[in-house]
Image (cartoon, rainbow over all chains, first blue to last red; front, side):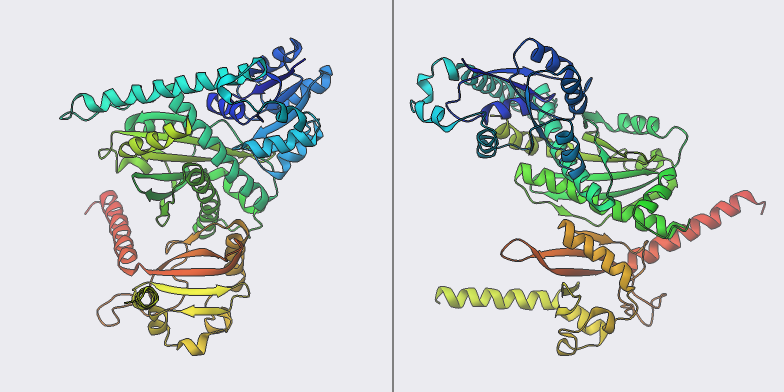
Length: 373
Length: 160
């Protein structure tokens, strides 16, 4: 009888990646769920002897799923696979009954090790299946089906982009963000953000709440409007830092609500004097940690090295719209990845915006299409 | 020319370039003792490399607040991140005279600095590299701009 494996993650790309990282020759039936609600339903339907669970999901997140499994005493073994690698997160999930915690991005060896160590998967099974993948029988059928879907998707995506760029040379190509690509960017942002959150958590000794990163290909004017909503009545301070690498360039904006300063200062054990100097120091330190870690996370996943410019103070105690007003006419569209960090039990909110230029999109898409395969 | 000689030449050129480049380069070990000092630092501080090697940074430059510097450096060692300081936050790290002592309008050099972790071959951070950039021109321009804006703001509110 084959084991029933349930993979639960809101990102399509992550689900595919997990499915591909399963050990070879494992007699398993794989199903997928895109959020906590689908996940619980699938477990109740008997599809989840083993659960590979992500933490950041809409509707019902990983923690809530774990709680529900405990409360309803559902028969499943859970292994958490997440980009949120804070030490506190690890503690919480094991406290809620998860077997183990694997850091994203996942690779086959790591997953096999964990599965072996919990006796869920035994090496004997792997020795049996020595035939090449093309002669797959029943057990591997599901996985190969997933791979085929993934391969098909990969064929689709390049097709979406190439005709557009070949079509009319005199006119600049219109770039659009297919759902697959957006999903990909979201996943990359997820891992990078998890890394940054982890560093911040260690530095401040708190639990950082990580949201789902918001990825959008937007016009500049939309950016300003979106930000205007963020700070309807509050004033904020911002720092921006440029980064560039072969073919990819952009800026990272860190925007912190002025009301959060005092709390962040106390967390970082600063002698808080309400003067511009201390606040600037604080902003700089936060920026160093968050932007540095995020960019590092992105660069590791895309296998590139970023040069970072010096951070520039956009303005202290000013309206956000003023901060971006100056460059509005230079670029039309940007790939914006928005991550809003907040810290548990403190009214601290800070927004990290990664903005990639239009020209970077081409290179980024190329790099990602190899990740999507 | 053999491979070794050409490699040695390259290394020699690299050292020459690092020495002459118009950016300050300081390498510190975990105890904040100076290991490397380039030409920029030497000329602006008036200290010879042999005077500074293995000396504590804080003994040599008393204007650097030890606690603040150590806290910044600790986060670099711990998180393997680069850290930056800008002149708006702290006008200078090292108190050097400006490049234009006669025609310039400021006593000291405004600096941006970068703290870079240096990894050993085993991947752990053993040394810290400080890059010191002279941004006096930028700073002066921005300060005069802000002053001018303030004056304009006042003028626009009062009747001439």
